[in-house]
Length: 245
Image 1 (cartoon, helix red, strand yellow):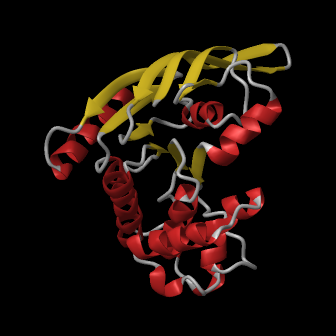
Image 2 (cartoon, rainbow, N blue to C red):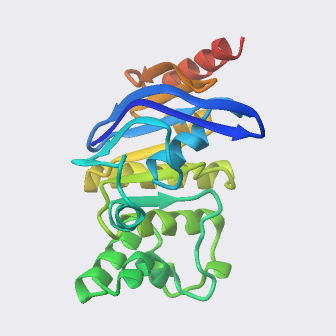
């Protein structure tokens, strides 16, 4: 589904050049839930921005489905972002003047393609994620966890190839965080959704199938969940401690 090969990205500040990503290689399979963790400055956000087509990369290849992103023009990249990638942000990015149902439909509203079947799908997603009772409310009237579950529903309305989630539990308490992560798992199990999540939260990451640890722009280690969630979280914490030593 997603293949990243020898990905390199640097920034120039004055006469200085800073290498942020140094030959990153990994893949994410269809229906897999993968997290990326690492300390500040490890390259997590830059990696996500390269995959989402928001910033160009220096060299390497990113393949999404059967599309190679390198060499695409801005119009082609915009089309990929709008139709092939679903986004979930830390601060929800819901529109205050729209109801929750309308917010879920925003990607289709932008395309001018809101058919009855799409409206039905929005309600089905809301019901699946436990927010069916608030679809006629506005963002100011619901909790942070409910906002983020609405954002996950919005990310799925186009049936994207992949969901990119940037610290989706960063603004939530532990109960709401778990509800949002369970929403991702629900999407994976019922819709075969593919999810790539940047997080600093070992609790959230412990629900994933695999976790990629970044350090100084390179992959330090990849851990695959083979035990129950609590054991996997302990393994993640040990690996993070070793990485920081």
